Image (cartoon, rainbow, N blue to C red; front, side, top):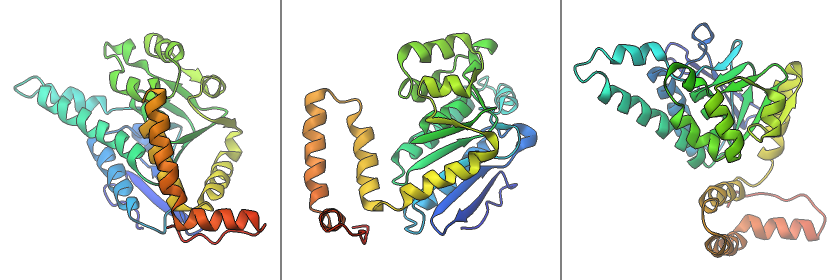
Amino acid sequence: MNNDNNKQLVKTSVHSECILRLSLSNPSHHNVLSEEMMSSIQSVLDKCVNDKSIRVIIISSEGKTFCAGHDLKQLKKGRLNSDKGRNYFKKVMSQCSKLMQSIISNPKPIIAEVSGTATAAGCQLVASCDLAYGGTSSRFATPGVNIGLFCSTPMVALSRTVSNKHSMEMLLNGDLISSKKAAEIGLINEVVDDKDLKSIVLEKALKISKKSSMTLKIGKQAFYNQINMNLSDAYDYASNVMVENMLKIDAEEGIDAFINKRNPNWQDK
């Protein structure tokens, strides 16, 4: 997969032939989620959906800021429109919502590698990923309340990742929290030394990449589908998923390999 050519806002590289690293590459503007940045990320993620060579995606960044959220200068400019920006604001929020949902619906596991600060929609991006790891110097916030703009869309991802009390604390205070605090409340999985972040995340991705991609796809979809169901419906749904999964070639192969103490030969079917 070639690097994105849209002002190089997003750069991509492939590691070990199966791990795609998508790097936000606009550090001079704090990797803001401008319209162009969101389009670039969306394009890469969409291409990965049916790319069988890509098994795991890492979202990382260049510079001291992972992502500072929406481009406030673009939003301010939108106010000059005759409707004071209403239709433009709807367009931007819709674009962002689509992007975040496409992370959830993408069949590939997606890992956020957070170096630096992730704020507002940047924090939303982290919360939307399946896994997230932060360096010791990384920080997180939903600071919209400080500028009269409550982080309502970041709230959707945050409240589905972090408990209500911790979510509301971040949303109401708007303060930066440390990576240690982010790990304690479940916003990220783990804190690692800044110098080791890239290598450790790649190690995690490689471990996941060795699993059956068919199984990962089924499992990721089932996880997000059942999470807001009531208990009975969730068990009914998950039971049906297990039955269909059991009938797959890779489940047959995996169970046989386990019983016979050998490594499985995945066909991703």
